[in-house]
Image (cartoon, rainbow, N blue to C red; front, side, top):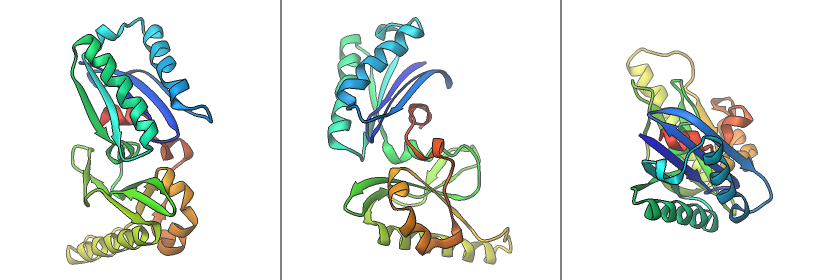
Length: 215
């Protein structure tokens, strides 16, 4: 199945085309230009470079939030319009699920955060299952960054208790924090969580269309 995936939920404008799990092509642009300027030309150029037409896409997908209302509206409208014109199905992908797929392997807790402004974040916690796919440990939630850090600390404490009960301790449990909410609030998160938090490389911190496609 050939899928075109679009993400405009944050400052990143992203589009990818995958076929049966194989990434055919991808654009991710984080610039001051608005999604209304970037997104449609990105889609058109990527399809042209892959020598594809919209009719060659079997499924259209858009990241559905949480995130910027204006950005989401632009991306979802573009995808729904193409899907309607081609008579093809369309699906939505939660932003936090997409971000969780930025981390391909590992046993640490994964906690994507999306900036909701005014020291608020959207967040959820995940752990990879035996198949390497992130599974939610919490519901999606919105919280003050201080409250969010406290929730994560509680998860880590419970994880340590569980490992002690199972006599399976491999060091202090850690959490991988990513997303623009983690970038903006890094100082607060480090102050509360200390050495128990990990921030991945910059290229893993922001939304990508290929991660959204994997989700």
